[in-house]
Amino acid sequence: MKILFITLLFYCLSATTAVASEEAVSHLDMTSSTLGFIALIVFIIGYALVIAEEFIHLRKSKPVLLAAGIIWILVAVLAKSKEHGTEIVEQALNHNLLEYSALLLFLLTAMIYVNAMTERNVFEALRTWLIKRGYSYKKLFWITGFLAFFISPVADNLTTALLMGAVVLAVGADKPKFVSLAFINIVVAANAGGAFSPFGDITTLMVWQSGHVDFFGFFALFIPALINFLLPAAIMSFAVPNETPKASDEEVLLKKGAISICLLFLCTIATAVIFEQFLHLPPFLGMMTGLSYLFFFSYYVKLSEKKLADSTTEFNIFNKVAKAEWDTLLFFFGVIFCVGGLGTIGYLADVSHLLYDGFGATNANIVAGILSAIVDNIPVMFAILTMNPEMDVFQWLLVTMTAGVGGSLLSVGSAAGVALMGQSKGMYSFFSHMKWSWAIALGYAASIYAHFLING
Image 1 (cartoon, rainbow, N blue to C red):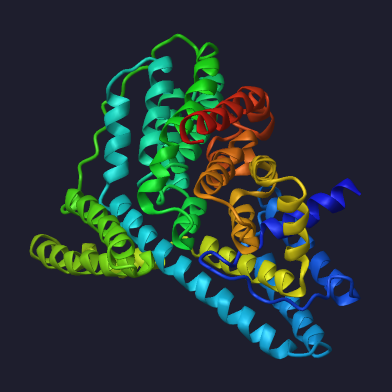
Image 2 (cartoon, rainbow, N blue to C red):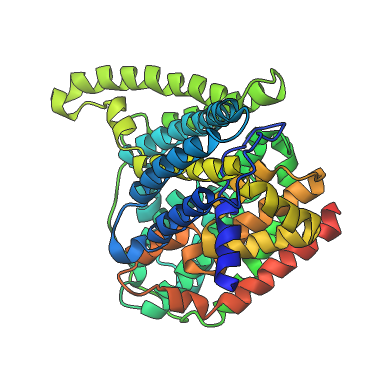
């Protein structure tokens, strides 16, 4: 019964679609039907395969894409027995497609910029610079943590975690204890840093695009997010080995245009903010406009490099498009349409009533954060936005923060944690992270208290 309740909550929390919806999409109210229950089972099986990705090595997009197709077949069959069912299905599909398209175009632009900066050695140069400093393990623990906290609001928590993880492995490969503690710290810091910026995490991006919180409103979460990172970091720092690794003389040079691309990315972010704040246009349109800056600059870089080197080494921006995280982007499609289908059947309305009418907004939002450690924060936030409960800005900020930082409680609760488990060569695992979950939980509770104290 407990498992069924969690899975019920789980699909709803995945109710990915209504990122920017002002009004709820109508549903068929067929939750008690056999086909409706089969649709729920299909989603649970599909998402179980997503959770098991680390062990079965099946890309997460594959099961949810298949599940989405099956669920909408069942929705279409159910719609035939409902008055105006066809219109409801058509409305839901258009709504889901609109929301996914906005998210896809925004994220695609960000991914292309990050790939371009990676190719120009921006992140590698930062990594080697840190290694050459000859810092102690304790200093590296704090430096990588703070860098993760302040880079993730501009990049994203996954890219930030992988970059800082590479630094930690380069200097501490022979110190498994240091690697484990530093990786936990990076996961917590990257997730916390992403919580106070619209660009730091998919969840904050969704809340911003939904119009529930404006761009500058997220910065009210800076102090609570900082506390969320600092408290467990301070506790764990006592266990970090007090030694100094051997400095490296490795050097990586920035390629032509690297700094310019970083500046163009900042200009692109500014364009998206201007589009949303002053022109009242969707942020994705500003990001796509900013992508044109990179396209024109890449043309200049390509012409410049042709004069200096063989054409095979030219900078091709469309290679960066090809290297975008397509598995992640297609996964979002599958989740959005899976839960969009379940929402159309009517499950989402029931869970919204159970959570927000039964528990109250504050309790429901805190529970959502804890649940995001099990389910992943992206489907959790999608679901809440789809349910669209009546909440003020304070509560929307609360759930933005809890969904963002709640994933730090377990290593599998965020993309950053899952990625670092794969990168760590066994030195950072689910159980090594869980050993410090109590300290992370203290930071989680302290950040909520700080939010009430500062923003309440």
